[in-house]
Image 1 (cartoon, rainbow, N blue to C red):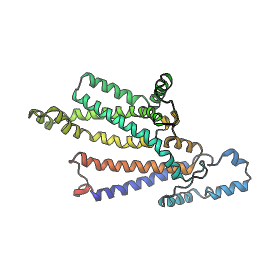
Image 2 (cartoon, rainbow, N blue to C red):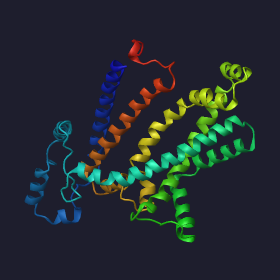
Image 3 (spheres, rainbow, N blue to C red):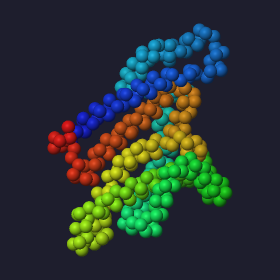
Image 4 (cartoon, rainbow, N blue to C red):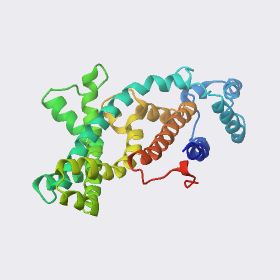
Length: 313
């Protein structure tokens, strides 16, 4: 197991380096500079050159890339151009809270409702609840989260006045964005769980357990659910990363000061350091979650062997 994890970490670090390299050179293709174009153009040429030299923007791109990689290896992500020279790590940390809160709530809502709907739909195949679940799954996958966010904002926020429409003033402000983000999560988990459970319920060991007179609820929970949950774990990894690191559209609709809105603002202002810092954060988090998912496979299903027995290499 330890050898397998070390091997995976090496592969994931290589993947992270490729992502950073690609993002860095694409970012340098953006027109303009991180400085306010109107004010910057009013400065004398000498001062313009001094500012570019100060931040290393006059160096060849390959030199800038080398310096950035060395600084990242030391844990230094540079300073933000837009946020008054604040450290990029501090700017990102200040935005994680709102994104993490609405993302975590959306995951809990979607996972709870999705698993329940998927299990019941498979157990009561071709029944009313099964058809209802499929309708929910189709709607959840088909309707973008920003459409759901706008509808919730209009009806629950504006028309009925039950919850705040936008901004970030109290915990109530996080409910509508969390519900909007949970629609697609509920739909995907319900659909995957239903499909896998229908296959598992037809396996010989399930038929044998039923024939032996075992309690149907125990057969469902101890055998069917456990062996059906692996596909859910597979899709849950990317879902967790996407939601916990912020949704660009939903955060902008509800004026939430999270990672998603920060990323959009950084691109608009050519804030190179912040763009790269968010890329490092997002990629590292994604890679870590994928590693956790790989390890969870062996916990959920003992038939999946990692390198602990030497077969995973």
